Length: 146
Ligand code: DQA
Image 1 (cartoon, rainbow, N blue to C red):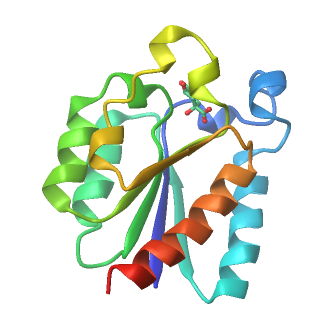
Image 2 (cartoon, rainbow, N blue to C red):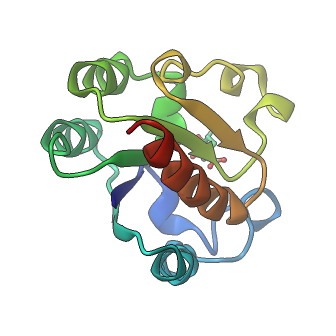
């Protein structure tokens, strides 16, 4: 079972970026939490971040046949990117949308997700735990899609 965690723009700044919204853990801290849980669940993970939309698109395209599930925090691209949405649809690897913050309780422009309709589901609002919950969902999604 291989799961690809993809993180979009500005998530490299976690730890210092608006900690009242996103918490004080860095992306490395979150990755360590996910790796710890993944080891217990017997899942293999890759964890990446990019500020570039095209790089995220390329990673989604390359995931076919390699990863069972993608866990995607597309960050601001969630609300703008038809390219990410099309990549998810084109590739067909089950994808779980995640957010640290509860996007639905924030500014109106964050309420709309262009990727939600092509994802299995969405986990938002649990801070770093959104990542761990997504990992658990990924293992379940994979188990039930066989
Ligand atoms: C985010 C929410 C997005 O609206 C925002 O642009 C981000 C982070 C989150 O994890 O809460 O960069 O995806």
